[in-house]
Length: 454
Image (tube, rainbow, N blue to C red; front, side):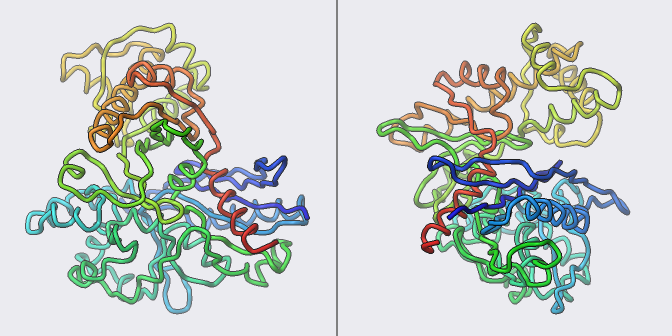
């Protein structure tokens, strides 16, 4: 019996609805609909436009339903940490705030001035980053945000979309693992910490694992979108990194492989069965995020192609060359030896990235890029140098050194970055799949479908 699975993948700049079917034992993907995801500045805060994303997701599903009459299930993945709050009637209490909003920047330092960061890491297992959900909630609590008092449930972004499709409120494990509120060992909420923060325990719903059915799409939604009445929503690796890593090529026997999920962020690490919660791991910059099958993604969060994306956006507005293949060609014929510390907070800005890079180089006595090609080369070789540093740090935790690096996600299409990374790391690089997130999303759905005997 034929079957079509829908992978709905939300990224920081765009979202898409992908349809997948199985041919010769492998998923074949088709993009049905792509749409813009905007960060909106209102009153000095940066929000996601959830109603627009919801409407676009529905439009994509509607188009898929017109094209395929055998849709079996839907899986949703997004970025991490961000959330919405719903009241007891299921009403969304305001648009979710974007992780790039800076109103929480001072919260971690204030909190850990009176709390042990070592103790925190030994339970949560993730690096302290202002973007983590815990600090947004602390900020809301401190400011007596009325949404906390009115909330019935906290739902991360993929959980929120799932809720309005099914009416079932729960949180998927891999997404929740980015919050700073999950016990890395038990894979459940750290309720001791939640109580200590004064947050209402009741708003934190059940944690479900990838591969769990979240229920059927609501009848009125099926009617609206033209879906069959038995279409299920499946909890996939809802954090896009978890889905991407699940699609990474499996290691050959005896080959130690690391993954590099390359996009706006770069996530470099290895898949483990249990978390590493030592002080050495914390000081080395590693987090223990959730993976499909309850596994642990022992990884570093690295500023990724965000810097290049900001450059390209600026160049496009100015009418300069802005397509990636042409820019890579320009970089390959350029020369500059400056290396940026890409994780420096100065590069997380929405400001003009050319000016940020130029000022950074001037202040440190580095050569300042003069052309588009030099800017691109500077960014890509800086990323490659940071990846090499990450591989070296990872090797310190492994009995055998990493022998291969699998680069997955959209960044795997950048041939120059792949080559520079291979040179910097001194190990072979295997590139692809570029659609790793959507493939990993679909693979979980197929596993559920197959296990159910369908």
